[in-house]
Length: 323
Image (cartoon, rainbow, N blue to C red; front, side, top):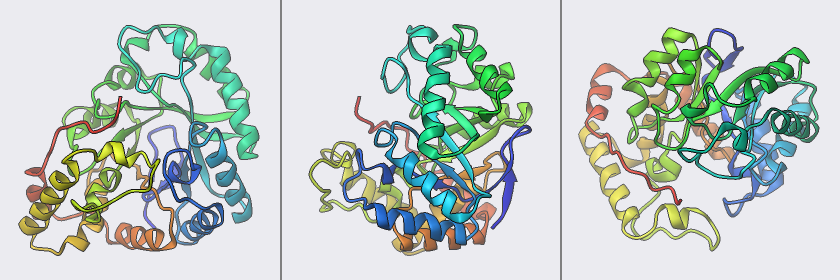
């Protein structure tokens, strides 16, 4: 498994990480703890040594499973987690002051709670679960982060950039106050490559690419007739005619690349890894089959220039996330 530095100040991490939202059981229906633990263990066996979770994924349930799996692996796994905003607003809204979302004491108390859930002494990458560049010079959040670093409770500080708002993080990157950013980056949403990635390269900031499969849209498994379990949040994400729209666009990608639709997941993952700014990509992997397929795709490395030129024509700027 290839490794890349998570920015100038971060550790070396596997280019394939484990996205642990789905195992939290809060919005994705069907996750089973025993299967999730086996999938985590298999990922570690395949060379994955970076896991991204959050307290918000099942009120700490994902963190507990990750901690259990990391302990069973005997260490050597880097953990990133996230602090929920104090006002519980996802995504961050314009005009809201930083003290309403991430005051220092909230940052510290949430980190200590996550340390207990994970069962570790240090969180390798502690992130804010939402962000607004209005907060760069507001509030006491820097004081909280500095205190956590000084106390050895976190190694690096990062943010998770709001959905489809790649530029809403550039000011923080340029301020020098952040070690990593997590951002949606996939064949449909290629916006981070416009401006954000240049800023992270210049500042030596790591990039965690999330949603490489567009919440399943780029797996080739979402078709007009696809049905999700009752209560699964994807019923809202793929509401109305969206499943048909996604399916038609995936078919167009396969046609332009002259490949079968079932090859699109591998291509989608390798697309993310083809940009030098990306440190690691974190697909959800709730099954052993997903772990095995994604590990094999990561081993194949970046796409070639012809493939990337074709995929550049398939940008699709839209926002399906419910507000």
